Amino acid sequence: MPGGRRPFGAEELVAIGRTAKSTLSRSAGARRAAPAESPGKRDRATRRADPDPAPFNRVDRRALHYIKGRVDGNDLQLQGKTVLITGASSGIGRACALRCARDGAKLILAGRRREALEEAAREAGGATVMTADLGTPEGPPGLCDQVLGTGRAIDVLVHSAGVGMYAPSFDSEPEPARALLALNFLAPVEINRRLLPLVPAGGSVVLVSSIAGKISLPGMAVYSASKHALNAYANVLRTEMRGRGIHVLSACPGYVSTPFTKNMLRGAAPAALPGRERFGISAEQCAEAILMGVIRRKRTVVVPRAGWLLVAAERLLPATAHALAARHLASRGDG
Image 1 (tube, rainbow, N blue to C red):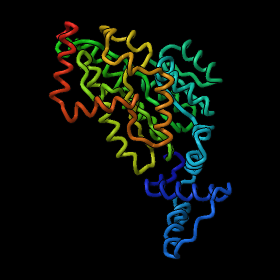
Image 2 (cartoon, rainbow, N blue to C red):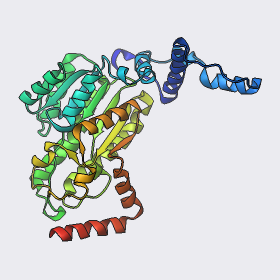
Image 3 (cartoon, rainbow, N blue to C red):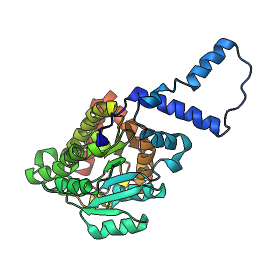
Image 4 (cartoon, one colour):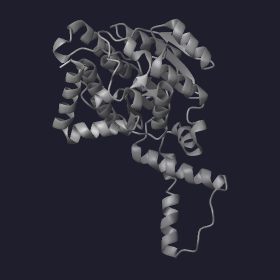
């Protein structure tokens, strides 16, 4: 860890949060008079509200500002914190940048198109812009070198860069498949390898996956595979980072109104995607859900939440779910 300080564990984080919440409540005069209780009940309530403050002497105090932000409300969550967002030139990444800027975050925006990044930076009120093509072998190391050169810690690392490909599983050509996997999966893995030492205890890593990483989407086999891999990677990373107090969020949006479907490596998604109009959301709504997931330290965010019904259907009734998907393909003439 930077500075050689020992990261604290999950139990210590919980103790800090409870103690900080109790202290802030008392200082704000928020404690209300409670009805008379028996001594035993009062003692138990006191122990729950005021745990032993000794953990403050054993933990890295850099997390105290973060915990205070969580207790006081959303406005303090990202105030003064450094947020690095890949894929920030458009879509979900750009929406996340603008949403974080509203909370006072210091932004580092990464992407391929400098002009689009600079436009996003201006709209956000200022940001550091870094260009890199993360789908190439030299892209992730080049971005990491730029970030390391700033000497800054990264409080929130958002992996939003990604690309799609619409093709049957039996007709997925190798070159587009390799390019997709390089950007959607291998780039976040390499960036985390290089930059996780910059994320302090209490920080977050956000992996923008997809509902396609939870269910099987016919016609998007390679894309779904990349997002399933990203979700599996997130689960392992979350377990490994638990002892360092680093939060890992897997964000799984459904259909989001972005240029994503227009910029596929191969093919084009059909206009009549099931649920597209009914369950589609904006990039801004997706960014809001992601930010709330960071604030609440969630493991997974599926947005819109109705997507959990699709996840449950495939897990509990896989044969039925796959039969319905095959029927939909046949109705379009694809199967």
